[in-house]
Image (tube, rainbow, N blue to C red):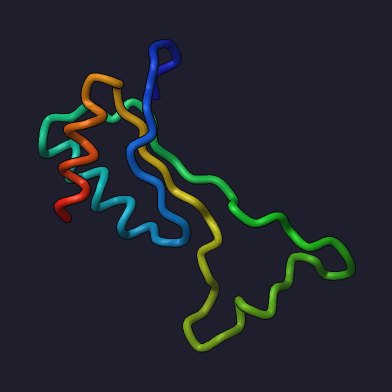
Length: 88
């Protein structure tokens, strides 16, 4: 992660960690330096008794992914990165 310098978000997806990893690897293989990438909780937790329990986690597929994942690159690489990720 770069502490100083401008960066531009070129990729964001909600609940699909595999697509995020694939996009990140694709950018690295193309020689585009990823300045920042990560994930954050996209949903606000419900408050109340046993708020940590969500009925959606107990379905046949198991716990769902509520995170949003993103990738940021240098501004001069942003157009090339978007084109590369659009062709997936």
